[in-house]
Image (cartoon, rainbow, N blue to C red; front, side):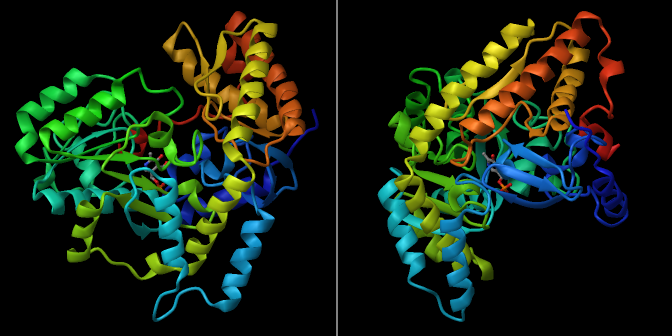
Length: 443
Ligand SMILES: Cc1ncc(COP(=O)(O)O)c(C=O)c1O
């Protein structure tokens, strides 16, 4: 293991703290969410599954830009198409045919898609989907499960009582969200059909939609999504699948294609365009047509760069048989990481579907959980690996990257196992604990 300095990253970080509240725009990219002082903060460039930081260190990166990168960084095919588009122009006073071609492609691939609207980010697209559902039904209330971005409709759930804890982070204060929205968004527990039915029984006549992440890393319990579908139909509520993170990973048409459960509307973003801002809201014709009568409008939503990037990304995902790649690579990843844990006697496991798994540590004392998660990031970073318990595969991840990672993670696991055995995790930490940031941020 070579000594890695992140001196320049830390110097830039010091400047950023005075200028950019929160330092990064995406909370998952905050240095305090990693191993501050050890893991890299500022990137110089990236290619395929490798990333180089501003201090010249090279990493195998399993975080894939926190999800958008699905064909690998700086993909030659997507980037060539984007460069050609830039030469022709990016945003115009009128629109380009490619917007229609992308809509045709999405309708072909995604079971719930009959009509399509565009946006730039996942949270923004969720807000568009909820607005359309409210417009279509003439009702206000939203029942939700999972994470759906930063907009008022969603954070309103924490007005009065903390309802987002199981869906996002603990303790988010809905600062700046109008109090008048209290009671408009209510969560339901994933997997609990009775709870959802109770909510619908009480509130169906005021409820516009159910919006949910159809899955994260584990497959839905047998019959669950079918049950949600049936309830939404029975109570006359629009069902929206938020496939911003799940889309294109276990099937090109999303979890809805994989499970055969078709929602009324769906939201895709992140991996849809391999690193260029782009999002799509798709759905049933009669529902989507409502958007034509609503004020849902933004200058950059017609941007041809994102549209071109999405068109080429979808084509390349199919051509490169991305899903099969994720399944093969993921199966090997899971088996080898689990073997590494066993080898060093650490209670850790890689769980979930092969195409999109996650790593779990089974610790006896709750106080150790954060220390172990931070140590995992720290020790991996020291060995040239960007890997936290949650991660995303891309098609540039290959056997060589996996072999390097398994070697590093085996050493990382050994450090953690030793720390737990000797009860000395604190002395192994070379950085502050990964921050449970909300309590602090708002206190
Ligand atoms: C399921 C889900 N919905 C919405 C979002 C928000 O997307 P964005 O960060 O592009 O606004 C995310 C981002 O992680 C997500 O995973």
